Length: 234
Image (cartoon, rainbow, N blue to C red; front, side, top):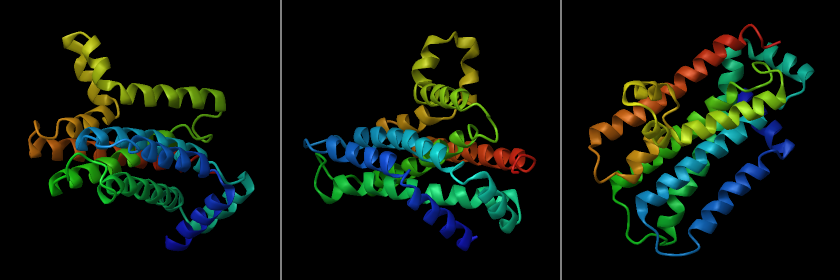
């Protein structure tokens, strides 16, 4: 798996497709913290939500990066769709984790907050960034050219999913009480950002539940995508 991951990372770096999303996220972090002081958990919630969007951007540009003929060779050497897409997912998650680490550590290291975050706050923020990075990656996988042939349809479909995911809480407030349960089917982005915004008001048990829910949701998306891709890899 490691050689396959190294190949995908090198291939991606040579494409320069990482420049726009990575620079956009780093630029956002530098801009937000250019004025001090900043509230701790509110800032983390905002950077975590943006990481969800940037990770989806990275995934959308990465998953179909190889040329069709090169994909055939790589997939054949990888041995299975699970190894092929699993390696791609881990590379993208590594990039997302690095960006999340930057978002969590930078304001602490350069004294950008109005106070130092506690260990629990920093841990919740780090996990929140990681699960939202994973969620952004796995959502975008479903809009690869192997699943949605039309690039126009894929792009606007992904934009719709991202918008609904980020605005889930606001959307729920507009729905009748009896149908709000359907919101549990939406990627739980707004639920993760809410536990960061309201960290002091929410129990640790609920925080852990929401983070596990987002991880489970992301895992289901990834496994289902790999299952579907077994018949469409070539």
